Length: 138
Image (tube, rainbow, N blue to C red; front, side):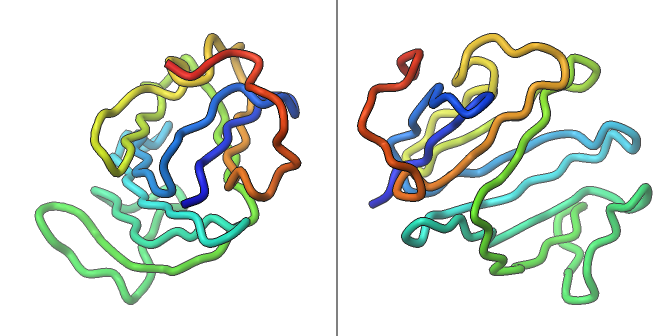
């Protein structure tokens, strides 16, 4: 199991002690709900599943997507070295849910964020992790 690390401005801010999580947010223009499920595979994040409630403003689902329970769902299996999340007070905060249950907002996980802050999400094995985070996870 490879935990998930959260960095702000290059500094480790939190560790999610699980190897998978679900990320949910609302599109800033269309206000459509997005859900993505990620897992670690070594030093890589893998996007296993994605879903979106609607389309428009650059959020068209791929042709492989199926419509189910009011959302377009697809299984991209995309491998990423990292995920970058930009914080904005103009939309609801990102919600992260661990595989073992329990959800929290991004800001409650990493601490207060200024407008436009970028949180980098990586498999911890992708980092030279030897020190504790600047702020312990809640």
